[in-house]
Image (cartoon, rainbow, N blue to C red; front, side, top):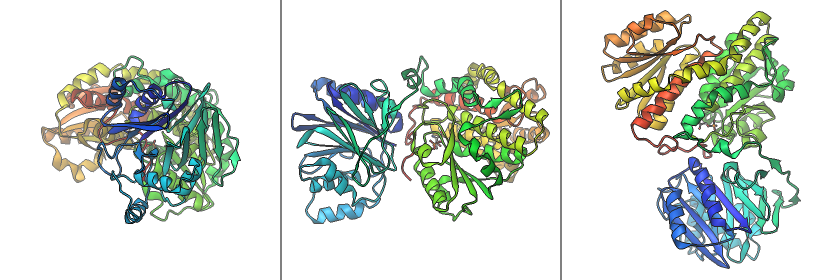
Length: 608
Ligand code: AGP
């Protein structure tokens, strides 16, 4: 949730770390700080607020250093104050470290250290590690870090420096992401590739409990059992433009508008429109196991969980194979019926979500086969799963997930098509579906053209206190997703409901101040949804309807109508979610909210 960047090398570390922190700000942004070595002296600067302020502070000081570690925080232990901001130092000021994750036994450790006379200056769990490293230090930082962490229970990504070894950064991880990168006479550590992409594309992924050591001469890595290991250098394939706004006002808007391309990328080489079939290289060898498994689960959080719900409906409707969806956060606590004959799909944009990783561990403990549907290449989930499919959406920076959702649904559609054909779907039906999928990028373009109209509608409803989203079948998860998007970035309370459920409770909320977004495509439930809209109008609710292109009847009932091209239930969720993404975006802009960095949220939730 927080961001870590560290630099050692021939250049001034400060601008590198500051730029890295700015690129990581989407991960956590309530306070930030930097620790750097000036010969053998440690300099520490922190601010509450954004990296820009830290940058200004450092610019005024004109400091120069070749070794620095920085952090942008998403508060877990203690509010976002100066003293709780990272880096944290040991009492003697010799150790400084930055940390992502949560130390679960920090209270016991802290109480023990206080009993020994140690004085803490923050409320954080992280400061405990600084104290432990300091106590364990006898001239070798990596040994001290290893010893300190042997007392720690929890998750961490860490970068540590010590005044006695001023030309060294030690880093390690367990359950939180951390990479090292190699440049020309300069070396980096970061919690996310985005931080260092302008300097290096040669990246080393650290595995759990491995320790990396960065010096001006290079990087070395040790295994969890302290053996030196040779780590593979991976080439990052995405470009800097992909993590920049490219002329858009916000990353979220850029990502919404990139969907014709990202959906195409998710299908490329996988959709077979000539044969009405699909091919997913990463899990092709597992298709038989998926078909013959005793149980199939999708597990995920948030938006990825909404994609999973659509996957479940498609599996059952088209491939006629049962499947369950479980919140990853609940999975391990509800004794799931998972065993060696089960397949568990973990769906995640970031590939670092702690709850999803915990669900994967639970499934593995129960000997299930775990497969990933993931965006970030080389992420923890990609590495923890037996096989998987990348969704190829490219870096998603806006905290509110948009393009990753449509790419996840695209991949789930491809998988459904593959399974459905094997389960007896006719070639004619396969051809119809695959041709509809092939047209998706073009149809998404068509929907995006209504952006200006949606922006106008957003102006009328930006003051609403509540929103209700209604949809049926595959459009019920779309309603949930529309409501989540609005909540996340505009702070308006919103709920998604299966349309017919409205009369079982939520109808009590409807009055003239309640906007209702009704997803009303011309499918088999069209007449029922029209009746729901009538019920809303009878109670003076205001309706924004999402209808099929050419539907004029709905214009007489709804206050506003947005159109999507006619769609199969295979492609409908993708087309229908686009106007909802735009609506939440424009409402948030109208309310003056920080769209890309909404309050209290972080891009990837790496704590349970
Ligand atoms: C989506 O807009 C949210 N920011 C959030 O719900 C997110 O989808 C969830 O935390 C899961 O993240 P993941 O896909 O990276 O695992």
